[in-house]
Length: 181
Image (cartoon, rainbow, N blue to C red; front, top):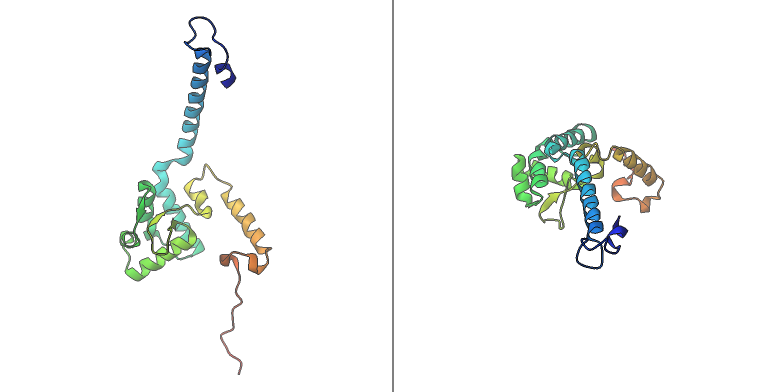
């Protein structure tokens, strides 16, 4: 298709230069048709309008099943960050949760650890992030195999020597509560 745009003119009425204008127009129409097709395919896959419900699902799963310290009260600030595509200060984020200072700080720490928000510095502004394990909630039609990929990564990490594992995957032996004297 693109090669046809570089062919010589197809007669006196085919553009002004040495190359065919009709071939170039055919290529432009083809390219725009592909772009429109991709937009029509991806729009329902991403379904930005339904993100509020999908964030709710990810937080509910995290709170009830994984029990990582993530709470549903993070919904409003997370949805705001997603829709605004901007940043919030940590104080603004905590205020939007409606929780007390200490509980909101713990929640924010859990969200950072789990990858729901990101920051460039330890006290910097927060931006929306998508943790790998939440892909199945955020974009279920786009990435249904995310859970399988995560399981493969977990299995691979278990076979690494302890020093090579990420800190979150290391197992620390627990000491017994009683002391021997």
